[in-house]
Image (cartoon, rainbow, N blue to C red):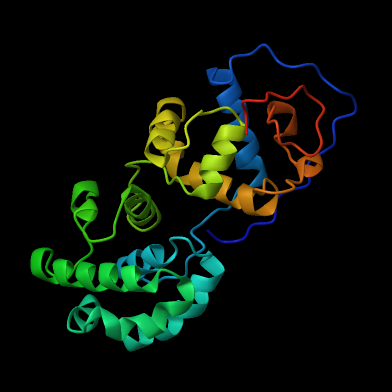
Length: 244
């Protein structure tokens, strides 16, 4: 999702003791959402695309790959193969050189060509806009389906859980799970449905800008006083060894 410069967070003036508030309390969740809205008011998908098909392909390519790299690859790819029909008639091996730099290119080529064929055969050449239909496509799991549904069709069917969303949700004690599907279910229980699309975009931005996997920039984080993660690099609140 596209780079967004976070607004600078004011550093707390004094240390605070650990909050006794339930980390899942509605008022705490609301505060987190409010801060994300204020810090990342304009969020959108960072994968460059002009239609649902391009977004679907780009999202498949983004697995274990950065959006920046995908955006380097897709202009030439979409010029060479502009439609599902143009990809459906080739063998996956023909696609591999075009997407090699995104990693796991053999599996991705099979998924993309298989998806193109199924869209032609079962969906009249159009990317479906229903969760179960998207999940029936080769290589498409809930993360990819949620990206397409939310970013193109504007449908709040679920929450995109990538490595950033999973990591930050654990640090903020919004979940204790390491399993993306469980993280998604935990988040869907506490975050209002109209916020699902923006929440994932905002947290992904936050993970790239500040709350990185290694050496997070906690001193500049607007959520710092609400975070008790054990791996914080700077803290004004007590830390929870289980939150990381």
